[in-house]
Image 1 (cartoon, rainbow, N blue to C red):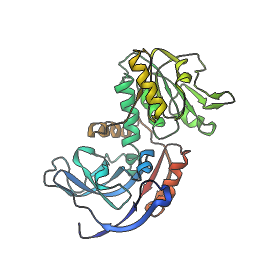
Image 2: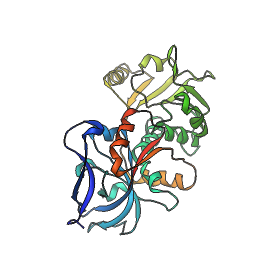
Image 3: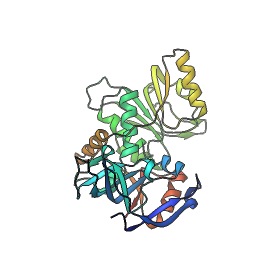
Image 4: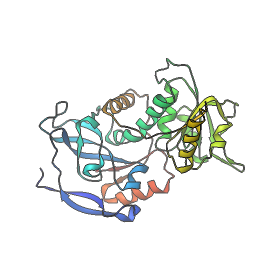
Length: 314
């Protein structure tokens, strides 16, 4: 397999956006002992991908396995999160670690599966690990705010929070209000008003947990809308949010801001794909592009107005 060439999309410098991507022909990679080689069917794009010019969330069929791989065989349909060590997923084939690969049920399409890893697990783990939200409904209901709820992470955060019988308020642009309502949000705010960013719940509820997918919202805007022990989980942390995080920590504030970066594990991938299989989690796909038009998908993601996920298909 390794001697054969494949089509791929690469870049030769940091950044550069869509114009920095080049269509090339490269050798098919060879899996190491604990890795699998996947013939890719679909790749989804996350903001972290174009910030470092990679593509990491993929789905496809295993065509070769390393000598120490125990849980997969050739022909298995899988979902995987690629590491940056061996390049991204904008190619015909990619190597993935067995530990970051999960079986894909036949009920879940490649495009749906590829949409899940980073965005879906960011939403799940932020809610559960930092927000203390129980997704099975056994915990005390919380008031949850999801900003940018029509984006890649937001659409999952709304649905997962509702699985736990929580009250969910969401913000999004005017054109996406109906979509976000259809995901189960109890209240949906048009995110911008003449006065600024809209966060206040129409019902007057203060928030126990905020999943913040929006850059540039000052802490003061959140502060007045939080419960006494409310936590803001910042998925796009910048210098100001890191400063707020430090200040809240050293002053022992009951209200917290916590920067969050997901750690993808197989268990999480299996959990999410099972929810999709059972019809408990919807995948919202904004648009699909062929690999030959990968730069168009890149540009659309960078533009920042996609509803749900952007997928590149083989």
